Length: 172
Ligand SMILES: C[S@@+](CC[C@H](N)C(=O)[O-])C[C@H]1O[C@@H](n2cnc3c(N)ncnc32)[C@H](O)[C@@H]1O
Image (cartoon, rainbow, N blue to C red; front, side):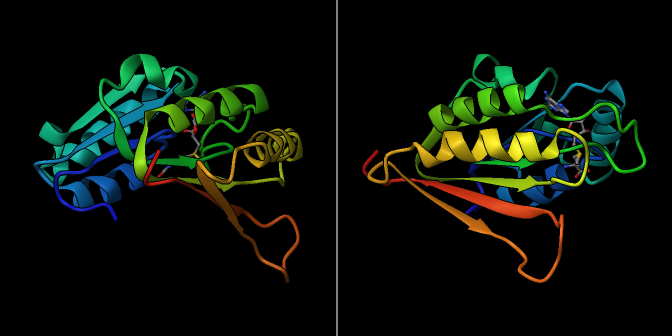
């Protein structure tokens, strides 16, 4: 669904892998907005984006994703969250239940009708299970006429990451 010219948000930049993927999909006529609270994530992503020639279509913010509605100036087609901590980075800098719920609530508002939010959730670190609980409690309250919320999970692995996908109804 992310075609050239579309608009996406990478809510957790980290090393910039997801931003590169999104920028490749939306192309030079599209836009990717990215958020992270670590300066290193911004510089690494900026470097990776420049190397691939995507700098003109990517806007990076050294800001918490919980404030994305203040910074993203247009409706978006997709928002991607890869929660938890950055592998190989500082494990104490981690997404939190409260800020994640605020960020997803903001993303729901920014989303165009027919748009998607993809959230990769990790539960193996301290705070992970609480983040899952708060997030699922928030998303389970969404009206099914407005949003379709699904979950893709392993059934033969413990503490494995899983994916939540939220689709905003077309009529919305
Ligand atoms: C699992 S990593 C993301 C990996 C990344 N998508 C990639 O492709 O490399 C999680 C990231 O979330 C960031 N983060 C934690 N709290 C945040 C917040 N409130 N707003 C934005 N980013 C946050 C961390 O700094 C970390 O870089």
